[in-house]
Image 1: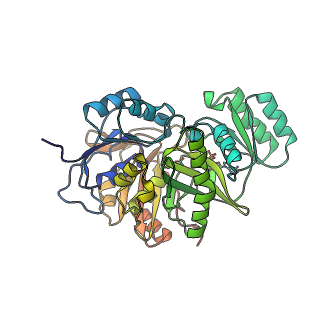
Image 2: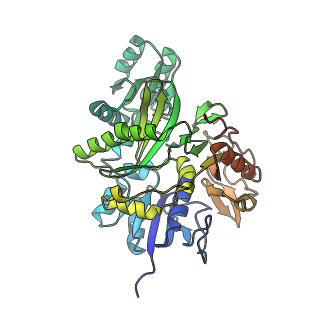
Image 3: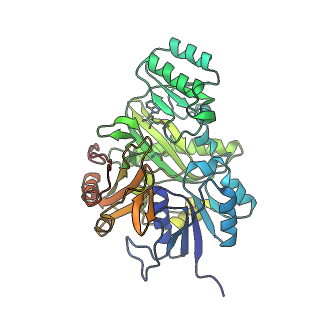
Length: 440
Ligand code: AMP
Ligand code: GLY
């Protein structure tokens, strides 16, 4: 007999993927969600009736790595998956979308060519320059000596970036010329990012508040999601080493609807048009990392996917059906979709393992998850977690992302921190100021 509903595969294992699985499992059209490889949070049973926090459709983790395109494709075929959604950038860079499309399978995300907007910073900068998208002044170098000569000539603070993928660690924000020289030597001579550092971008350093502007894109039309703010540094007050993101909140009260419209018109729309003109239309989530400078918003980088932890702050506020919006992207009819949002705000606090963003121990038992989960308007999204002998233990650097709703970011953050206070594992690191220092 015919199937009851759609079967969805989410690729990835972080808090973002848990949030995506949760969001699509709420769709009345979905029969089952699979997350590959997922984590200890990405399996749950079917619920008799949908609730705000508990989706109706069940989910299960599938032990296939996010980069194992061949086995993901085989799984999608065998399990007659109706739609695959790609979380992280690595499989996009490997061409997972091209491979699924060639096999006639539906998948949401940009092709390898379109993902270059994230996987090559040199490409992204050239595209911005050619399209008049505001971005810091820059030069691209393939040769260490030439890069060093440039840095020695150039006054003012610089940022040195590996052009390729470096897991969010590829940008060195430098105070002095010596720091910029040291960064170049680490990237191009010591090759700390391998091939990703064969090309570098050196750019002028900008000042301002950062903003993550994510949008659904169908190749042509851009539908912005709520603007979010990530906290990338490890310690309070934006100090310490850069991380993948220690927390986020959405929406950002300091960005007026008019400003948002302008950013879509002057940044996202021209980027999407330029990609289409080049014969590599962008379908998926386009994420502009912006610096709000005194001269207006400037693009620091583009990403070709949902942000982590931005997704964990944005998706709990989405009242529309995420699956429907994604299908509209794949069918080129995003212009007819209206996204509805729950009023108020969501704040997400990341709980990281001791040692993060460096090497971390694994297998630390996590306590208090059920108690935190029981709280109203709190979502416990798992990231680096695993199940061992029936217990949930740590299994990565960013371990959990605790999201909470509130009428404004501060109240949402207070609720998230109340949930955080229920949770414990040895050496747990988190920031105390997520959503709390937010400008009015
Ligand atoms: P990226 O990987 O390009 O997003 O850079 C990572 C982080 O480095 C950003 O989130 C900013 O905090 C910082 N950054 C990058 N580019 C610049 C810039 N031109 N000026 C100041 N800070 C920057
Ligand atoms: N939160 C930063 C990122 O997802 O790249």
